[in-house]
Image 1 (cartoon, helix red, strand yellow):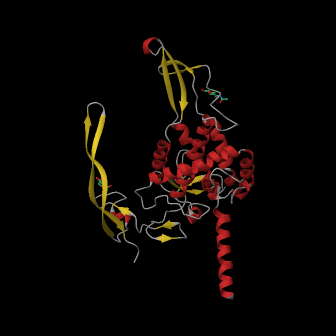
Image 2 (cartoon, protein in one colour; image 1 turned 180 degrees about the vertical axis):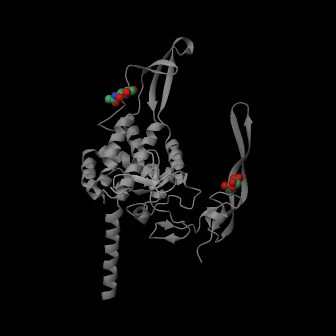
Length: 349
Ligand SMILES: *[C@@H]1O[C@H](CO)[C@@H](O)[C@H](O)[C@H]1NC(C)=O
Ligand SMILES: *[C@@H]1O[C@H](CO)[C@@H](O)[C@H](O)[C@H]1NC(C)=O
């Protein structure tokens, strides 16, 4: 009985300790439309204050968490690490976050990009009290095709970036250690990525579409563009160490002393291989993951299953086939049954 009690206490302590280390605003994604600022574990006081002052913004950010996680899943769907989140874990990514590897760099960048994106969009949609369309986009302006008038609704990415910086970075600004310095840098890379893909959209006016008059607005591109961009940054991430003053980074590979640029993701720890499940490193392993027999990429069975081999199961799927275009204007297809082999990685033996 004593032993059992001690076991229970130990469990509770471990759970609480893990929570207080890792929990963050990401947890808001699981709260639905009611964001209770005092019930979110891991918010620092500045974040709690912003949360209380901006309930609608928090709702938007909470809903946005699901979107950037989906984008992260998409970017790494064919990868051993597939951005999997853990159920019942307040930090979503478990102990992975205690490390400073490439994967963590990507998570920080895309999460802070996600805040910029969702807040700017919520401003434009009129969902928030403190912002709407970019008020600075008025009057006339020039681009390579001549002059145009600002019109419509330009997404207010500056406001969203400011809010994201204040809210997301607050936690890291409090910590002031090497990990926090890296998180701040990667958060910034993420925010800049959103702004980079703003596009000028225009409507033509004038005699029979001559386009002698244009009204234009700056619009956010699809979040996929940001995801693709950050995925390339992940591939090109720079291995760094924090300098002796704790104020910046030094590259550990290539030209020493040269600092990484403000557009590069930085990391300081090598990643685990993510082959087998391991709580300490935050790896879920690849047992049960679907792989592709013929692919030579990361989703190939050899790479994905880490040489453990795979199981084959035959499944029948229905799909549309023999689609024909009928004049005018319909596409008609037949339902075909296909039998396909699905290959899944064997577990560790
Ligand atoms: C307004 O926009 C122009 C460019 O469109 C920019 O140069 C200027 O800094 C902006 N001002 C503010 C207050 O954001
Ligand atoms: C498997 O990989 C090959 C080669 O990359 C590709 O052509 C094929 O579409 C993939 N199969 C599936 C089911 O994804």
